Length: 375
Image (cartoon, rainbow, N blue to C red; front, side, top):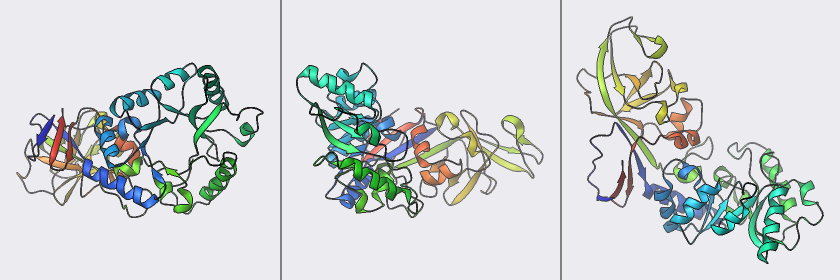
């Protein structure tokens, strides 16, 4: 549904996730300009990093993206229904026996091992012409990709193979001081030299910020599109999400009272608590117990006790009495605490926070003073 922006959200919702599609667009344009003349593709795997493929995909296409990457074939099938005219690469290639489905759905496989290469070549022979695909090299991460020895297999790389992209993936791109990125780049160059004239791609989000030597002809940002910091330095990207939760209950407890499962937290003095209806089913991890906080305006309010599936307890004693009541709003992700900061309280990374956001949030998609809402 499309609604004129009125600043409201669902009265029924205990928490809501706001996705700023203008910020998403700004991030794509910023990255595209940074890597020019290389092409800036868009990675939308995992339901666009949890933010909703049906909303994110068309916005990125309007911003200029013409090449998209997903992880699984099913994701590619879903994206093809939304975007009929873009290139879609499937990072995992295809499972045995599923090559023809790639062709049927107009998807391009990323060929990661010898068996996938041979299956794609067999289909090419059956169809009567070489079928386009990307080829991935293992340049040192030991995850996906053909090895240098694989490239030497007689007849593997013949005219029945039509590579339209060769690629690899950096293991330490978010560690700018790591010398291994340069090592991988050299290995990648050696392997790519066997495919003269074929466009090359080495960098995802963090690799873009290693500089032009890592851009080649195409880059594949994912997390950076959604506002995740590319490394440990200042974040040049726009925040795409905010997450707010309403107070479900306010209560006062005495010194010595204990809170939550396992009674792991004990009040040292009379304490006022607010219960929020958000928990580990929504991507607020149990590991954040004793570490995380939410915000009321400029006041940090710490989490106390364990995180439950559907709720957390917040110490609101720093606020004047009667400041909060059921239905009032606290900020979980926002100006005072971005996704990366929240992730650090759980010993994880912003990627995991985004992709773990549950399906229970009321979602608000904001673009040019228009809201697209789904409950």
